[in-house]
Image 1 (tube, rainbow, N blue to C red):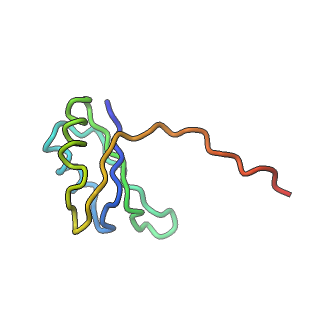
Image 2 (cartoon, rainbow, N blue to C red; image 1 turned 30 degrees about the vertical axis):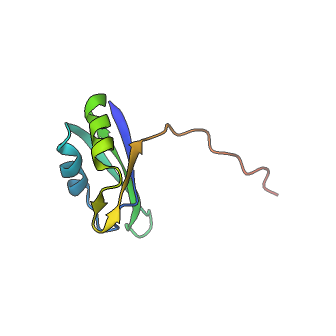
Length: 91
């Protein structure tokens, strides 16, 4: 199972479009399109989870820097969320 980061998405991109694009390379487990909590507007990036690493690698190689909705998307392996840096004391 591999989680893939997809960035520089057009704001009109849908989870179904991503599922179709990545589905050409293998089984897509889930698509998480990141949206603004208040407006519901896409933030221009998403995470796609694929069931096996070889399909995920093929999708990364095949889709990185390709055009979607007039924008060249960035596709790479998602990095695990690290600890968020603390901002120091609040006075």
